[in-house]
Length: 186
Image 1 (cartoon, rainbow, N blue to C red):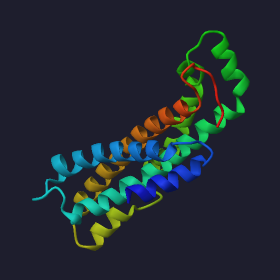
Image 2 (tube, rainbow, N blue to C red):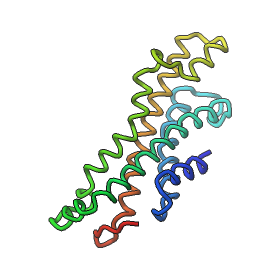
Image 3 (cartoon, rainbow, N blue to C red):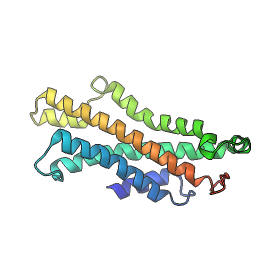
Image 4 (cartoon, helix red, strand yellow):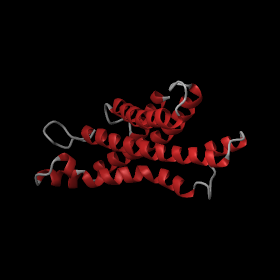
């Protein structure tokens, strides 16, 4: 699941940027492992942490959304740096570090990557009924418990998207600068 999600996200960022697959894979792994381990070990607490009943659906929900966040953040940052090459080089000429030169573009990319998740969180229960909630209610679970789990999943998805976007933006930014802090467009 992780490798396919990383390949799909990398393809949306662009195949021109060398070495992005390990960056995206690592970002997805770290962010989803953090949020999933928190959910499974501390909240759900099944008999075995690797129980497929919990691990597979939770991983699918978290990774699917993190994949979208990774591709949005990476694509936006890559395109902003490419489109604003002269501005970035001006910052570098005036003594800014590469990270300082692209700071506003990095913030914009992370913000853009979180828009779908935030929109989903705004309308859940009013405009849309999420699949996890609906499935649990149809299975006979108390609606309050189903809603509690859905809220947990939404916050886990938001955390995973934020972490993934930050890590992917860091990886993309590093691909655009060489060891001498010079902008090198792929």
